[in-house]
Image 1 (cartoon, one colour):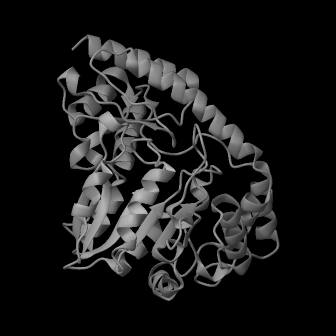
Image 2: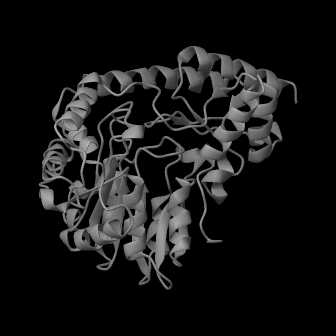
Length: 382
């Protein structure tokens, strides 16, 4: 248990709520949750599913209706000929991460993961006894890695490479050429898989989403992690899925049987409506995030001592605060106590996150503007 980490966003949220209970006003830029309502047609489908009796256990890998909808959607979005039996549905996307790492990582195995990156990657790798090998995302490359170093990081013990695009916490998104470079390395190591975390694929500010699974020879080497929380504002519905090589399906399903049994049936029917129904709400949400991105990027650039590459996707800014003279933890604490802004220390996202903080712009433009003003006043007063 000492090897198991956590996700600090919920801890910061709890501290912020405690201050609010004392009468303090806190602007929340810590939680990665869309501040939009689930689209009405999805809610209606969920309500109807409850009324129609979808209140019982379902098959562990998911209802066939949803697995088939996921396969159709993947063909449309990624251009991958996906067999619906390669889909495993879970209560949220995080279990896919948990199960895949548990299935592939153990003592004597190495797993490459992005750093700064989603903290559960490193947590689960180390929990399983494997060696976590960080692939550093570089500020001077707009948080893209130096892929010339990747071949030297891979050896006969490397079992899994994790990619996340668009990326949390940095907001970077891999180009097609970068994914091809990664794929070339993976193809030369027959025992190596890729877990491609694509949960933010619908929140891109230019170009189109690229999946490494769509490249020649990579579908059979890639586990795609995706879900409904970010694209459809369905965080509380707890619904995610993995698309994986057929040989992994029974192992991941067995882990699900031993832990969660299945995802809620009525949530799965709502998921079918999300994928097969109109996508206007998704596009409108992404457009609003784009407006907020411009607001937060410009605002951070005007604060002395702060530098922030412009996010390419997702809804996070990851500015360097080194020139303020504060550590990441100190900046997080002073932002909360002095500026009334809840944000996250970059160190919560790995060793290469020190000197940075993460701000989620899943909040109104008005609140973002107020937060930027408060942070500017705090930094100028140091």
